[in-house]
Amino acid sequence: MDDQALTKLLQITDSQFPIGSFAHSSGLETYAQKGLDNLGLTSLLDAQIKVGWGRLDLAATALAWDTVNAATVESLCLELSAWKVIPGLRRSSLSLGRRLLELAIRLFPGIAEDLLQLEAPHQAIIFGALGKRLGIEQRALVLAFGHNTLLSSLSAATRCMPLSPEQAQEILITLQPQLSQAITRVLTDPKASFFSATPAIDLRAHQQAYLHTRLFQS
Image (cartoon, rainbow, N blue to C red; front, side, top):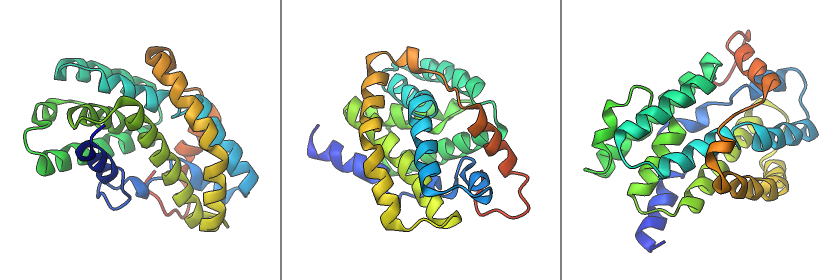
């Protein structure tokens, strides 16, 4: 991967890239209000990597990187919508995807205008398709998406539970080997990893919309 592609990857994964990904917690806030501690948070994120977004969303990113036209991307988007059964999580994914697409078209003219017709532009899929068009290597792209998803959860945790930024970094280091394994697993057979099996986490994500007080959109 050349310097231009690498700098583009760093740009679209930076926390200052304004698509709103750090405004979502995917149900973590519900767990926090029920007394989630640091050990529980680590276990929760480990489960997400193994059978949650570490399967479904990373596979979607990898598959989108391999797509050749907007019609194929559209089919992938509709399939991902079917897997995201929790309305809040599905809306978050679509909202972030639309914002990423709109910003990419503004910043990189001619790179993704054909994707504007997508009915369900999920974040992971737009990220994957955009990364391919920016010349970013597949493994680096999928790893970056997973790393940012993990960071987003840890950032949310520092705001809704007694977790310091230093402790969040310690958890990140603990989970990095699992994330690397997830990337290898997904890239070996993306279609086989295109699923999610986190019913308890999904339930908490659904409950978050009904909390009496909350900080996050999802």
